[in-house]
Length: 260
Image (cartoon, rainbow, N blue to C red; front, top):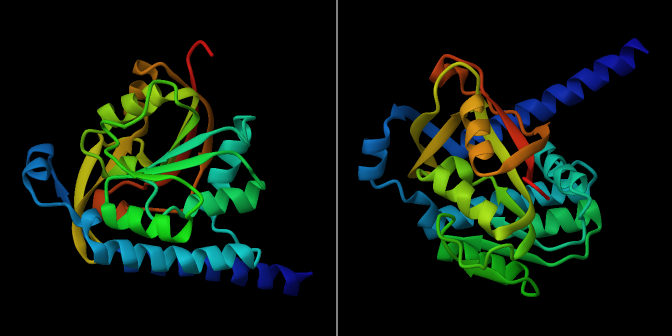
């Protein structure tokens, strides 16, 4: 029994260490900044072809792990969030879809057959998505001005992109507009005491910004947009205590459109 417990602890420790190395390889050079400096700076790293290629390569490896029976915690959280809507096979729009990997992740973990559409503001990301998943529609578009009609999708999944959008209030409003019933904000970094904070960093070697949300502030923004948080899930570990002087975590919020 003791030997089994020790093996389990080593296994969990190796998983967490591997995740920390993965995050360190992706994101470096964190520093505090402010809205004015962030808006004025050239933090357009997500447009770069090299970033799209490096992110895609990283997720190809994670998807292989998923098929080996070891899905990462954020993959599991996304699938659970969709399952909690009770609309597993209805239409999903993913905002900030990257190279489209969540279409495959949700299909595998949920055995879903519903329509999936991905939108991303990076042409390089969309090009990779179209290459990997030619049967799914992918569109170049801005999260703050989505090219879709009101209520076009049963569920809108903001796939780990809200933290990179300076006009996040507008992005939330646009997701709400396009959703018929459900909005999922996936893997949002939050803290409890400090106000919502903007960081500059390098992602896959290119400059970008990242927003760490005060959780109460974020929930207030959701309420203002007529979104009711029905479920809140813990996503992948992500602690920026060394940068912010306060522990951070990531959460996935399953929100229902008020009145539905």
